[in-house]
Image (cartoon, rainbow, N blue to C red; front, side):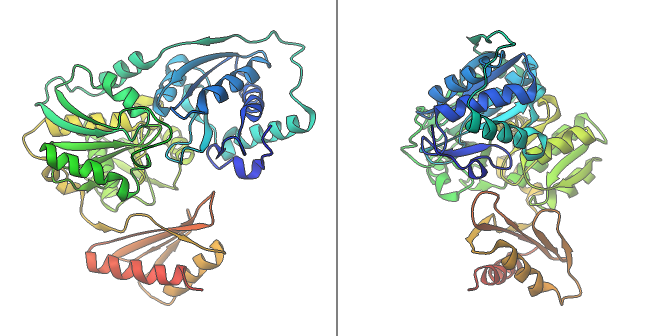
Length: 456
């Protein structure tokens, strides 16, 4: 069994580590038993991505759950949002084996309760960690009082695709040419079925499922991983490009000019579409999204609610407020009609419907939602996250026009710009985001903050 430090393996939102050094089949079995105990479920659903280590880890997890008397339904290869669909549609807790966009040597587990409700640091993940720690000390307990659970298989791809297409009507759109970069991840599995029969000319890129990621990292948040897609959109004369991350729960958009579209602009676009059918509804956005998001929500009669970064927090706020939609700067998009869970595929269908519903190119369609200039997320390795954050606070403390907010890291706001610096939960990093009304202002604030963060 892996000699794992669970304090490093169990993150704020999921389990993630290097296979087999930190996470192996033995630990996966313990996590399966702990998940069954903490959820108290009679049955769970389990899926996995295309990483070579995933199938064996899933089998071990299911075996651990079965040892506690819990049935396990394995849905096999799937995207993370397909697992959320299965959890919601079947009313079962779920576990997805994936390390998302991390390199091939990693794997992990994203878990949810029935109805795709999040399992995070404050909603069960620490209990699961404690149970695993106990079992590491004593061994997997005998299920003397319960019959061994059954392990069965089920295919959910077709009903998942049908459910998504039932939420967004694409039957009457004009024909569109779309380049899709699956990054050798799970979009290569889901896109052909979801897009089947729609008026789309799909140009596939890297659809071969390959957990070694031979072409580029399956992390579209990093601009270098969009270069191939941008070039192909231009070469094909396509209407747009779509890029998915490794487990295909995030979707990034490239316009017809080959330019990346801010996820904040997509959040604003989808919010406007959702509010058209639900006047006065609440829309969640995290504190890293553009100023344009709450502006657009208010302009369309909605109520914006600001929250900290992270899917567990967004999903909790979705449930608490009854929000119709939520979006993050990282291209996670959450829908009330999808059990408050995130699905990049549904966001992509909204973009296709909006674009195909009129004659304008995507750059024109999105121009009203891209009002400010942002830096994107910039990471800096630091030895003391708290000290460098306080140095940024001190940098602006004497200015009269500045307000400070500690909701998630430190946010500094003026009438012309804002910045947020927040610590990584998993690495010795500080993450900086800056937005301003003018590009020159953004660059000046960005550079000033980076000098302070990186000072020795």
